[in-house]
Image 1 (cartoon, rainbow, N blue to C red):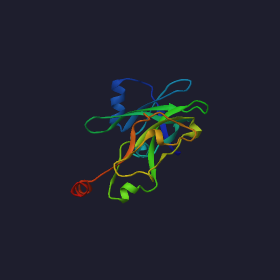
Image 2: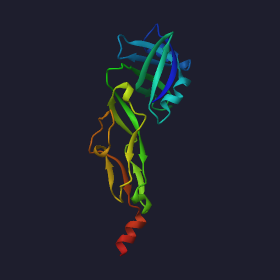
Image 3: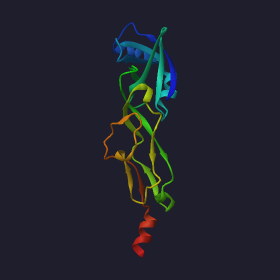
Image 4: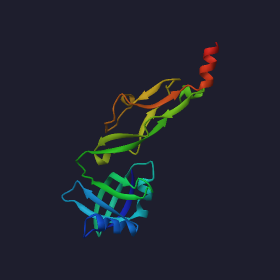
Length: 189
């Protein structure tokens, strides 16, 4: 799994006014939990670009005034209008405690339905998985090599290696839709 480093600074004052002042200085208020104690800190907004604006899942090495922590992003909040990053929650990783995380889907194989003129529609881009930090996958592989026109791959058909998929097993991950031109050609026959 990809690892990024974020350098943070502890927050002395918590609250709405202090958070607003931090955001005005292009800093993001953050909290780290899941360990022995919660750590409130702030980090420069630019450091989150590769972490949050990427389809890949990543672990984070947090360096908060010399203290090192391994963590994953649990939640992030954005402003509803200007989409500025408002807040990030990190979950500290423990080597023998399972973690829930959204992991991107990667398709392998070539679908016969797509070769016949269908269109592959991705219904789920990420799946929620549960695993030990050492077993967290970079992505979940979905085999579409037997996907015909009008058919779909469900979550229950995905093989999980050293992790558990928590997403609803009956949810479709990908579907091959039949274009109108093919439907018309079938109706004319």
